[in-house]
Length: 121
Image 1 (tube, rainbow, N blue to C red):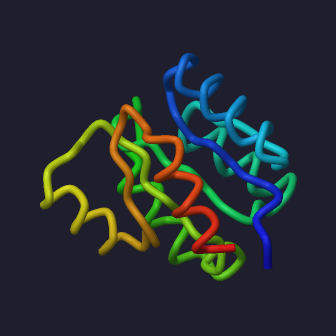
Image 2 (image 1 turned 135 degrees about the vertical axis):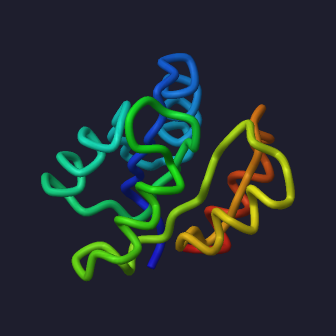
């Protein structure tokens, strides 16, 4: 399955614009959400092929949201890549334990992100 539809969850408008632009240039369609509530609305509208998940957000954080999505039978097959400024090894391990397939730190390295997406596709 190649990845065509991506949901980007991040509370930073700058980050949303950067990632949306990058993914669209690489032929993907992008939906965005700024928090957990938005993310579940977007998931209900259309199931993505991939979710890029920020960690630090108001309300439910990315770790909690990743766990909720990964445990939901409707969405458990959707890969999640954590995309966060939290760059400690413990954060990466915790993110993977919550159900993330991969972990990338900000500022995002474009070629690294595209390689990770390609590896899932």
